[in-house]
Amino acid sequence: MKKRFSEQQILGFLKEAEAGMPVKELCRKHGFSDAGVAPVIPDTASH
Image (cartoon, rainbow, N blue to C red; front, side, top):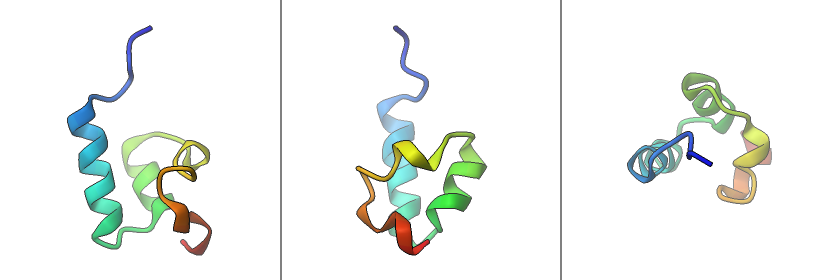
């Protein structure tokens, strides 16, 4: 199965989240669900 996002893209997403972009906005911007992000970025409930 082909991955939808490359490792570099994922690292870029994480950097944006660490810089303070709300997770819901980040997901909307890049076209993926915030449900899959919750285990990676633990403070998703606060965004």
